[in-house]
Image 1 (cartoon, rainbow, N blue to C red):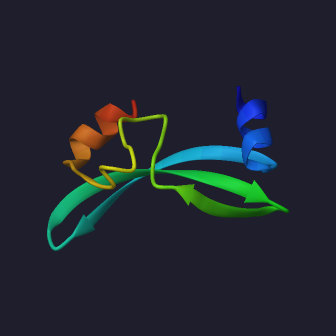
Image 2: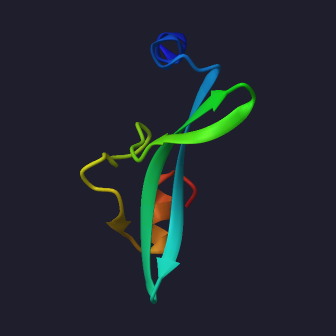
Length: 74
C-alpha cells in the first residue's frame, strides 16, 4: 500500500506524524503527511491516516493526557 501511494505522488517515501502544541494557553493536536522528494521531506497534506485528522479539521483541541492516550503513549 505504501509503495502504491509513493508511486501515486511520485515520492520516495511517505510518513505520517502528529503534533501536540500549545497556543494562548490551550493545547491542540494536528496530523500531517510528509512526502520525501530527492532526500528532502515536505509537508504534503494537513491530514493523517494514523488518527482521525482530515483536511476539514486541521487542529483539534486536546489535553496532553488525551493526546498521549490517542497515540498509545500513556
